[in-house]
Image (cartoon, rainbow, N blue to C red; front, top):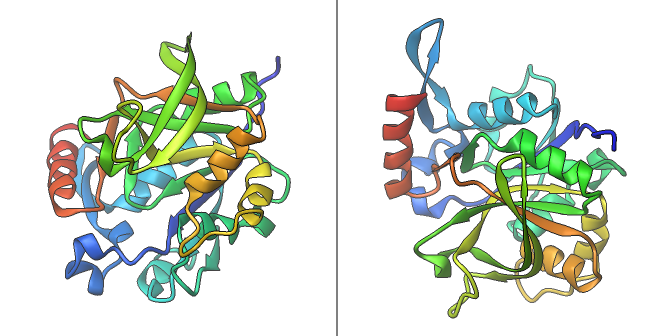
Length: 254
């Protein structure tokens, strides 16, 4: 089978970032700095730069940024860059933010990456899996010791693909009290355009979560897979403890 390139990506950056207040009252969390190297010297770069580099490296050079109403500094940061900007004017949930990108995506497959999650590696393997399986959704998975804090998957099949464990997903739960596994969904995904119709069909009380759309895909017997990131590093700038760990890791390794 010929591998299909995934050339589009959506980065969601419309959340309130309350876990990182008060710094995020003045600077979006996507602009929080991490360490990297440039021409052999240590530099500090916004977290979102690492996300964009990951997506570009996997072939997704056409990027849409979903911004909240207070994300003016982030809009200014990308002003002269080739990025499509769409606003989510009310905080209606991760699923609603993704839905704002429907016109940008059209019928093409696309990555989704939240602005506070950086997975070092795995993007190319996930894209290849999506193509080879003719999938409708591929989830980036990580093992966690605190599954009740994350979206968790249940599985019914395991295989190997490009030195990664791969699972057929038969269920997802958002922050379950009694989790069925320790496999957490990191905030990086690949979708077919089917996800938009699934999200539109959901009548949610309160915020529209992306996991609701994934649940609908599974219910409708669409092809949903997870790829386990065991060797790859998962960095987060979404809360103080994880941001400290991300800073430390980036200083020592990036």
